[in-house]
Length: 333
Image 1 (cartoon, rainbow, N blue to C red):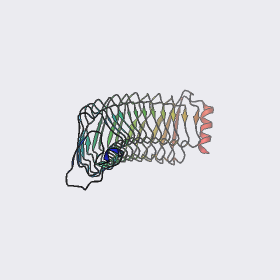
Image 2: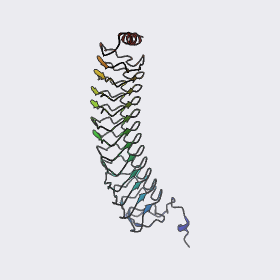
Image 3: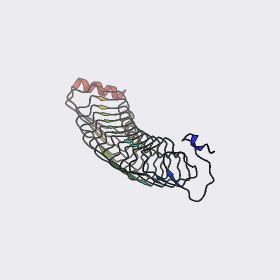
Image 4: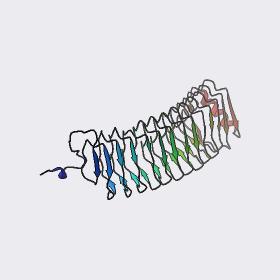
């Protein structure tokens, strides 16, 4: 008697690999040589690791009624090129499609959760439209999706997790909807072809290294709702020429704009109370700094403008003479 029904669902049956193997999934063990899968209408959840490392799997047809895709469900399916996402699906688990060859995924408005690493290292994925029902994009969700050139984020999303789109080197533009209040650390780091970033009112915090090494980014305007810029948030954006900081901003973190070598002028709004060390360090073409203040500013660290070798002019508005002298002395040190 076969004992395959007693095997763990994480274990694959070892069959010889024919040219095409059809399989109807009902929640049982899966042959490792399967190439095409159709889900039975009764299935409501894909188990964790159900199709893990099925390297021959090329096509999956999911059933209407399916609610969840478990962690690592299709991870390592390096031949998987297409999949339909049913309108009933609410959750895509961690590493669900890690390393697959999906070129496009259509996500429906029932979806609520995209967990961490869900589509990471999907190197040929070209576009993704995140529906408004998704509240948070998990950490590393699309990291190393090298061909991802189009990302649509819809109103409803509140948080973009850390490293969610980092190293997406084909991405050229991104619009952050007004419902997003936090961009996680490294969320778009090393997106080297990212040329346009549109930030909408509603955003409150840009975390550390969120856009670091976005070498093609030429300008950025922060909405007035942003209260803080994390450390190294825009560091090493070598093409960044124009930065618009609006009233409402309170803190510019350490090295936030460090090594932005194309930046020539910066206007600091009166709401800023703290400029941390190295905030604009090594901005070697920075020539003018204009600081608007009603004496509410508390800290400009000694090395905030460290190695700004072209800096010729500080323009202070509404500052006391005593404070100006102190700042100039600190800068010389």
